[in-house]
Length: 128
Ligand code: HEM
Image 1 (tube, rainbow, N blue to C red):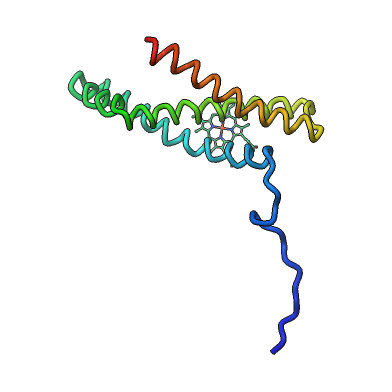
Image 2: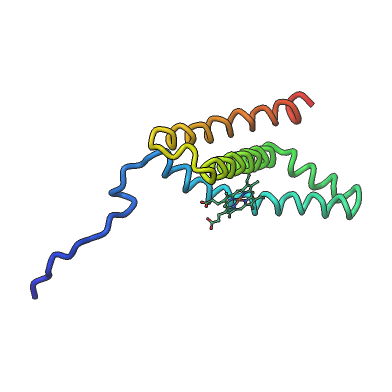
């Protein structure tokens, strides 16, 4: 039986990656990661409510190298998502809509998120 060639729709392997596309996907991924990070905050608050022993144990886990790595990632996720939210807010005013402006604001999101995250950790963790 002969198979008729049908038109196919493009998918991820065919699209050329653009920074706006990557930031759009990253925005949703960081949104999901924020849920997990908020669960960690809830665990810490619960431990604090339970008493000194519980909070000492949670601090021990969160203070380990792996815990710190996860918390650093959560900080970046929150900050990146917030920057992405502000980017959407700018677009809501119909500004920065031209192709080169969209690219610029997408790059600004990633660069600002890294700088702000490093600033937060420098001020509140590494220098505290
Ligand atoms: C813990 C805090 C947060 C969580 C758990 C969270 C979670 C999420 C998730 C899962 C999405 C994706 C929804 C979807 O695409 O169907 C989303 C989208 C969005 N978030 Fe957040 N978010 C948080 C904080 C924020 C903050 C602080 C801002 C603004 C500064 C923000 C602005 C937005 C915007 C504008 C979208 C829609 C993006 C779009 O239309 O593509 N979010 N959020």
